[in-house]
Length: 112
Image 1: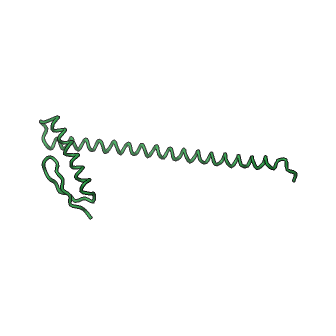
Image 2: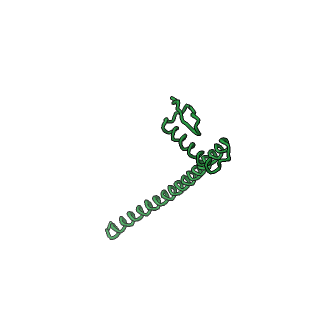
Image 3: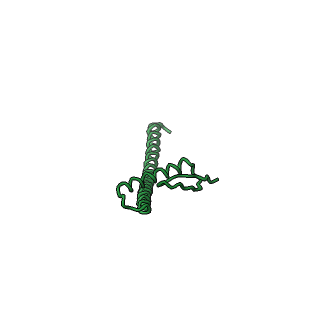
């Protein structure tokens, strides 16, 4: 069930419905409000809309970089998993070979 959540950005209170917790949505609002304040202080001549667009671009940039990092980490995990499987298969094969050789040596001198 969606929660009706209120948060404030730039002195304006917004109300949205979300499945996320109020704490989470409000923390996003505080983060956005902070980012907009930093941008506005650095460039006081920008309109609120321009500040909001720059804050949105910063958030989009962070999200895209996190997505690309996630993709790279998944690729590395897949590669390591494949290398582990090959190493395990090799180790298992070597162990079977060593056991077979031990068995042969044990009965090598036995008359049958």
